[in-house]
Image (cartoon, rainbow, N blue to C red; front, side):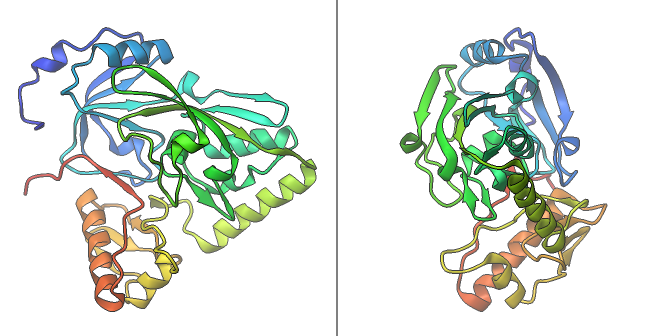
Length: 306
């Protein structure tokens, strides 16, 4: 579906109580701060609003769901169809004993801090994961010795027709940075299990994670988190470093000199600069090691025509 096609479909969008924007710039919604426009950006008011919208939206209209854009690259030519951004009521968190139910729009850090306040251990690793619970479910996010598969009991999701599904841990099919849940299903929430622990110990663990992140990773810069998944038996950053890519640049984009599995927007990068730089890194790693690095950053939309 081309961004240049007739826009008649936009005139017939389902009525909603949420917010719909046309030709919405997406750069402000990503940590890289680059990228083109969404044909339609929809921010649902609540679950019923979202269900009704999907049930009435023609199936041929593409739908893309985003969170806070921490691990997302929007291409310069924009994103066809509808982008759905979950926030508001989709970020609620509730607690029963040592179990938390967190909306897909809840920040991973907020979930970790909520568990900390309640003296629930086992979720500290989420304080080192940028993004939201929805994205964490989609890619079995993990850091600092923990992964979503270690703490997830179940998840709720919505299919493209607007039908609700309850997924068990087995249904989610978690593996390294992957879930087998259908790509077009929208995660709504996750129920996570921790264990009762000492608040001071939990706080100390989260402080240690924060310190480790700041010492090893670029922070307070325009980046998209880890760029490439670790191949089995290897660390992506070591392969990138061995290929001579530390500090490599393309246009306004650069491989971080602090941690070379991070790409940076130095201020004037385009999405094409960042993606082309990543692909050049992949090419050099393949040339030097024979290993095909896989993108961990999610790339959506179309390239701008030159």
